Length: 430
Ligand code: PMP
Image (cartoon, rainbow, N blue to C red; front, side, top):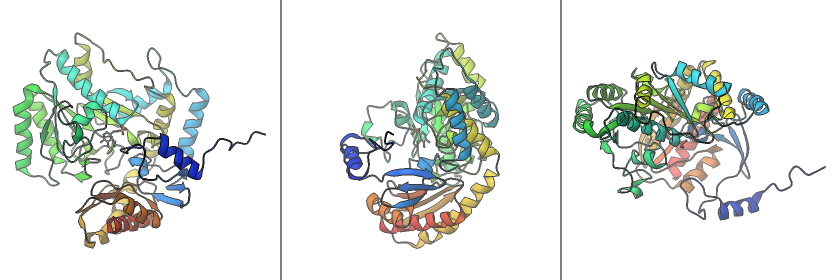
């Protein structure tokens, strides 16, 4: 019998090879901080070498909404694997991709009828921006070639998305002057302020001749700073874009599939964008897949142009395995009272984080939907904060001045309380 564990790396050897060869997100090479080694994951728990089980407060960067190793998602993957894991999408189509596109059109804000299946969130934003640029080019207005957004945003790490990320506080400041230069409004205030709304209208009006689209994360700015803003600003953007012939793109990659208490954050304002990106929780965190949806106006505009096609077609476009799991994940979500679960998490986080308000070094505590944030008045000591959370039996990944959680929706009340204790401990020690 061959040993099934032959060749499996463990312990010090695994970490030494990791340090030597493997680039980690936002990290140096060789790595300076030792990552934890995850052996397996089930429900809301990660089994981590040397630390036993940790409750996951991050849902794998906000994607694993149903938790890990879910029997329904496993079955969807297994069933599809036995039929085919992948075929090219050029000239071919298949049931999982068509079913997923139909599901997305059915649940997205009305009017978003066409779906481009991309292979990551950043790529879906690239596609969204390409759609907008090409739309105006097709209509004979190539001068409309810039994007307008507000500060504090984050849209991914590939080139065009980087250009609409926060130009200063974020991760991509290094590339100022190299990236396409976009137009930035101030970051949106948390509550509605007419003077800020006026700034948005004025900026859109002044630059309309050169702006293809306004691109924003609706209601929650995630990796740019975990900030929440009044949904009323979305209506201001919609009206100003309509008044000045500018397209509106909502990046719902972080907010989609219920995270904020509405299936899509656009729903808080009943605003329909021209283009919308989803990703992350689309496959319940199982596989990499994202989608760009657009209206018939955008699709028909592109198709009327001199080059009447959208020149984008990743090798793994429409991956059947990912599409099948995505359909199962959406059905799982809609088949339960997900809104009640998100509300339960929201009130659990409010309770669990209330004591953070009085901790020294804490500047703000905020909760919205299944998102809990403790903002410090200093840069977090990531190693110390991580150690403190792990000591409480929880996995967190703070960044900048933020210790936060976006747990799976299946997180039980006791585990939520534990996450709350870990966030407070990380805020205290970090
Ligand atoms: N947009 C938003 C709002 C995001 O939060 C992210 C990922 N954090 C992205 C785009 C990029 O997605 P991906 O990491 O899948 O490329």
